[in-house]
View (cartoon, rainbow, N blue to C red):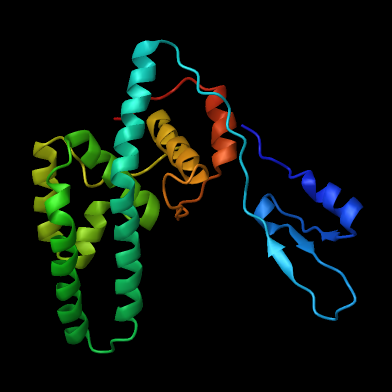
Length: 228
């Protein structure tokens, strides 16, 4: 899957007299259009990355069904992962303004109770596979596993029991999101990128270091590796 090189920039430059200032980069987001006129003031518009998605192809009906089930579950749980990431950023920002550790712990406990109250009712309704996808997406959005987040915010002992309980339902809180290595994780990323583009989900960039376009080209020519 190739990136769109935005050839419209050339058309704009030719007919409207815009000059394009290019910078050496692998990302289209680093390109700008500069408006030139009689005014001394100049402005630039950052361009978002644009992907051209290929047609989805499946080996058989069974594979197609699995993909659409994965898409439904991914779109369902993504908002929870996004919200968790936002709450974590808010928490960390607030903690930097609190000097005393005693007050930090007190504030953290209040946030924990709020988050648990906000999430618990809905999360109890998730299936096992939806729960595991959510764990992966939390890693995608925060860069930390669900286990590490619990350990950091509560205690190592609580994290151990959380993980043990999750294992009873075949869910690992230590699961990471690895679209470079696991084909299902790549499919989840592909589902997200399509949903962002078609405004089915609100975009939130992953904190992990990978390039979706590179992943797409890789998996086109690689035998899929199943998730553990």
